[in-house]
Structures are given as C-alpha cells and as structure tokens.
Image 1 (cartoon, rainbow, N blue to C red):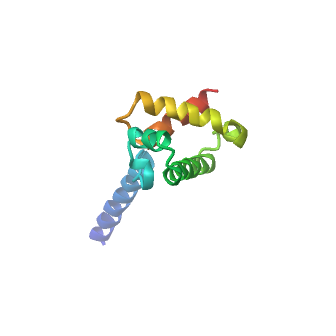
Image 2: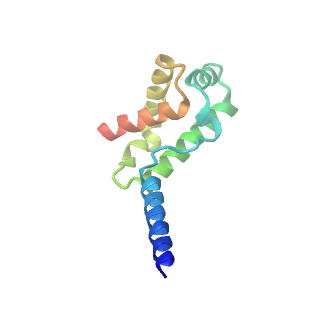
Image 3: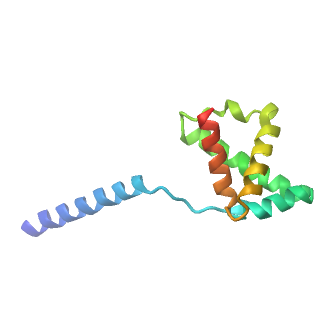
Length: 117
C-alpha cells in the first residue's frame, strides 16, 4: 500500500512537471520556406521568381492565420489585402538589412511591428 502511494505521488509530480514544461516551451519546429534566409527571400523577390514569391507569401499568410487564431489580442486588421503592399515593402527592407536572419525571424519582426501599431 505504501509503495502504491509513493508511486502515485511520483507519477503526479512527473505529470505536473511535464505539463509545466510544455506550457513554458516557447519554440516550435519550423517547416517550409520559413527556414530559408532573408537573403534567399530577397533574391526571389529581386529575380521576380513568382513560384518562390508565392511560397513565401503563402507561408506568411499561414503564419498570420495561426497567429490570429492562437493570440486573441493580435489585431489582424493590419494584414488586409489593401495593406499587403506596405507589409511586403517592410519585409523587403528588413530582409535587405538582415540577410542572415531566417524568414521566420523576419515574419516575427513584422508581427512585432504590427503589434506596436
């Protein structure tokens, strides 16, 4: 009986610690063009590689779709189609100035910029 109680307590502690760790986890595995560098993004824009540009835009759209779902305080009014040109210009400038950063870091910087507006 004593061993069952000890076992139950240990399992409970492990579960609580696992849940706590999962809540604190601030990273995720990035897939697709999000792992590419800003230099690769900017190269696609400069060469007018429409296939790659579409992939980057679709990745950005997916990122902001998820952001608006998981962050209720995120104001997605700044991502309307009318403001898309301004967003892409901001992204182009960021990637031009930060060619070694990954595309996901650029999108996260854009997200922070939008939060401040």
